[in-house]
Length: 344
Image (cartoon, rainbow, N blue to C red):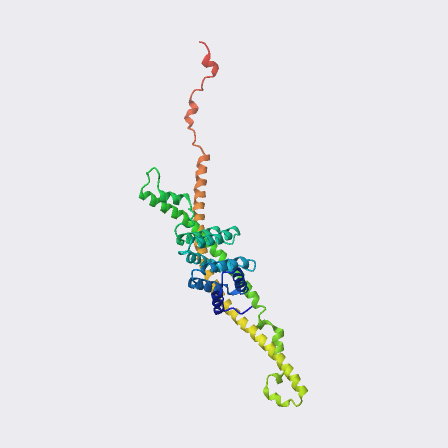
């Protein structure tokens, strides 16, 4: 397959048609160049916004084909497309007719059935789609009885505007910890994926051209006559010239191949440097989050320890009942049942 470049991708996207063969062919080319997934997705989104309205849905079909068929080879496209899907679907749905909206919904349904993305993320895309489709299209789902109560109000007419605001604030307060936890989990998943990619890139560099000792030795031991034109004067017969020509040809092939491998290694090392910078930044962000979590956990531990301490004191007071006064010992004994019912 041809070498990847953003210009080549832009050209292929401009030539993309709505046929299944066209979509699948370009998808295979993109999957082959999956190590450039971030650039691919960025160009895809840029060209999507520039495309005519009649071609925008084809870009969604292309993304669908790439995401589903690249999963078994790696998570690159699934992860990188996720950053653009909400805006991408919203852009395609903006002012779209009923047929386009149904097609977008069908793609989301397939992703949900095959667990391509989490349900919450797909619902976010749906809300973006339903907010921009023309009226009369698919109606967005309602989420949660609390929100519905806030919108409708108390049917008995008892809740006021203040009550509704209080309920809304309460809902937001309940959702904040869940949203925070979801973001932390998502960031942890992203860091895990980036860690795997980083390890994979480092492993690949172990097989890089500069580490190929055998080829380096062959290049270092190339005879002088294939490197120095002044040695040509020593060739005095045709047979020697043919042998030299063969040696020169083999040296050219060897050096051209090694030069290409070194160029690829250079590009890989540049990408690795960028990955390391991104990875270090992500780890610093995650470290800050974990430090906050640690402080929260320490505070909870302190609170629970204090409760345990006070509970022990309280339990000791419960197991030691107050002492009965001794002056009751001088009282006369109670009469027996026989004395109570005896006749005088």
